[in-house]
Length: 191
Image (cartoon, rainbow, N blue to C red):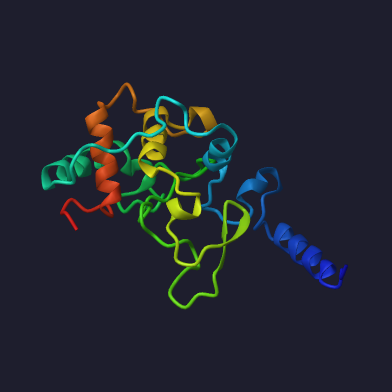
């Protein structure tokens, strides 16, 4: 086994620690300030709760549903997730884990997966090789409708985050309209 690079790795990690770029009390976020592996790890250990498993958004992506989703998103989600879904809303600062980045959640290629990419990327703290795959594809064909409806309905309580549960505050239709709006790239006009 070649340990030639080990001292370089240790020195680099110590330098990052010394400059405060790694928070040793929150190692799950050491590889990216906007990365939140918490819900993913919960999902991998427990699966999607049975009441949400297999759910698919039955509401059509109409301009009416998208407009409703945009209004509901602005009123309920933007304060943390940001108007553009970038996880940088005015209430996001200091939240641990930070609010999820929602832009392109349904169809964006994995980070570092632009055209012509070599194919390696980090996701959830592990190296994966899935060139050009969407998040759902790279997560084993995860049903993002069920996953996101669960996250929106139950909030962060199951994973210890500050995200509120919207199960009691919003109707099923309203939660699905928000998810339609997110799936449409946070645009109220059908793409």
